[in-house]
Image (tube, rainbow, N blue to C red; front, top):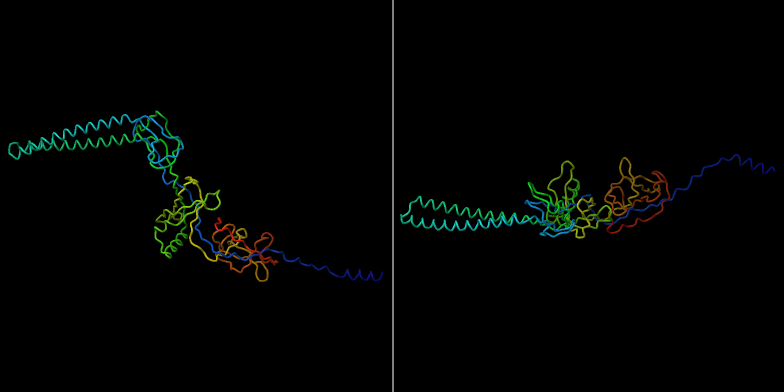
Length: 375
């Protein structure tokens, strides 16, 4: 009993000592180093190469509609027919006037030649010759006017057939059969839209413009070669950039209000996957960056001072490292500045660790993205 009591008394005299838990295990990895194709990324919108409103250029009753709403038509195909009979009669009248003018010219020419011969023999007076000359000149002018009347009548007759100016899709008609069109002012009949090819308009920032121009000078690229640069387009619901085209136009000056430069690409659009007015993603290749450093985009944090990642120092203590980011490649992000190839970056447990905390690093490897991965 004495021994037990002694042990109890001695144990009550000891203090409880706090034993800290072991450092948490956190997955870390060095940045992935690989060549990355650099892109100029932008957003833009599609626009039709040609959009034309079809109107009635002559007055008359609509006699025929030769298409169905929404049809794909070819250039030169007749779409509307305005009664041609009045204009056919006008043409025949003009042609009859030409025949009369030719006869009058022929008679005036004979009189003029006769007066010239008589005046040379001093048989006819100069006044008579002048009158014959004036009559002949008037007949020639009348003949020219008759030809103009014929040309105008032919033109008006051609307007009775409203044809497609280019290949495209015609919208729903705005008129009905038997309706009087072209009275007083041109009447809108329908609209035709060309879908092949199609434009994509986007804007480039001033900084990107300066970088691209410097790259062009370094490579000795001409303005014509610039138009051969590929342009890739993707819809908001698509993965990647499946629509391919080339650069078509670059504005000669920046827009001062926005500090951007308007750029336009052109795409074949043979499958008509793009319609005018779509909001699209655009990327333009800018060359290849060797040995770029990439980390998962999800591990990048942000605060008032900018973007950062957590790295592990030589003592296995976390540090917050400010970084400058580049383009996104799949699930990874290019780090332009702030990391070295040997840095160990935290890639897991980001919500449970903080800078200054000691950890037990678990080495992992960042997987490379697909060859054509898109943001």
